[in-house]
Image (cartoon, rainbow, N blue to C red):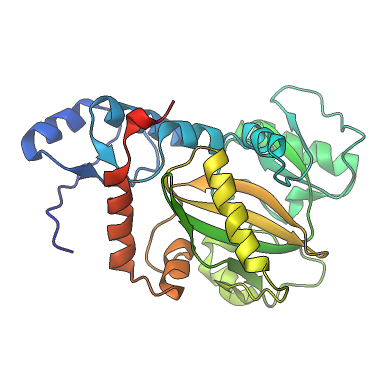
Length: 298
């Protein structure tokens, strides 16, 4: 692509960033961090550090990362502005599990703070109070995280990639397709569905462009994704996860700042379907980063 690249690995020290800046005088940092100090959410603090150093970076700004990653807060922000989100409640670690009457089964139980489907399995969809208590206990005791319990939406699993800052563009609507799942299995993105290639092959699970028969639905979903991106103050690039229920009603599940960028993954593939090569996509991400100014936020 014609760029001079300096690779810098971070573990638990920030000083190396300043040293690298003095040595190579970079124009922009391509942020591919998964964690800092072995804590996945600490990467938002590293991005804040980059802003204080006045070094531009790819991906989402710290505020957008905080808002989008807090699943409960994000849902409250979106619901306030009329975005359809499933009803939910939170069970912090140590709290007695008492289901609110407004939540009716089936429900899905997720970690409040983990991403990448960590902790999600077929057992996450519960149909009675006993299973609800058991699944929440699994998250509390096994993973050590608070639990978010949502109304389960039966339907299609859709993803929309969004790129930009103030001006955004949404790529084609992508869908996780379950061709050979056993009868009665829930069509949800469990950890095995996302990360086990052997499981994907066995059950015919693959992602591709969504076939949406209703006129205007694809455009509406892209509009909805961009709206969510802006409401959560995201920048750079992100992916919005939506369930389309059996009546054709979309429900926003969550927003993912800095989603997986690897070649062949959903974000890159949806861009490629629009005619954007992988190299061109990376260049677009760099261009968006160079246009973003941290002092615009606030």
